[in-house]
Amino acid sequence: MALIIAIDGPAASGKGTLAKRLADHYGLPHLDTGLLYRAVALALIDAGLSLDDHAAAARAAQALDAGMLDDPRLRDRAMGEAASRVSAVPEVRAGLLAWQRRFAADPQGAVLDGRDIGTVVCPDAPVKLFITASSEERARRRHRELAGRGESATFAAILADIEARDARDASRSAAPLRMADDAVRLDTTELDADAAFDEARGIVERAR
Ligand code: C5P
Image (tube, rainbow, N blue to C red):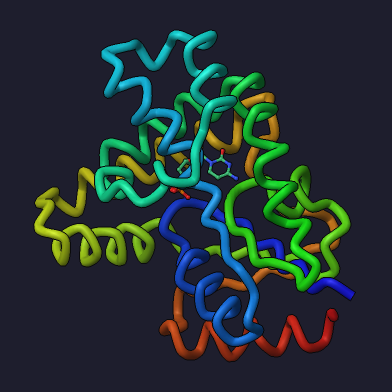
């Protein structure tokens, strides 16, 4: 049976790193679905359009091309915020849903990470993880990651970003960030990447 691992959680919770490691371990394709929303936002910005132009955002979601997902600008701090704004538009979510479901239909299975994978994109996934960590720890991780990429921002600014983004993602009416009833919660506040991976692998083995 196809092994679909659905991973959700708030910004900078470590879900991306974990998803990549689980995909490598099980030999499965991995999709970071946040990149899709970031790509829609970048397409609008590059076209000089407003992030509040919902019709243009919906068209950008329909026209999304896998080649756009390699653009290094997608990882910029501002793009997370911009993605969060376009991701609240129901037509954008609908446009990206088919894309994500096609990816998840790989006969071997797939690992997808995002905000609504266990609740909306792959509600029948045999394995669902919900990754959390305190907002301070998430801000520390994001601060290190951005510093490593040469992007400077204060810890306080990053913490404020993360908290604002979580609040918007959890309160929107279209597919809000929430743990699926049948997901297993993994709090990584006190765990390094190796320990989080070991815990997650144990959960996958028990659930599959
Ligand atoms: O995970 P990442 O930080 O790259 O996601 C950027 C934004 O895209 C999130 O803050 C969220 O608003 C949106 N997103 C979403 N649903 C997903 C993945 C990301 O709404 N499955």
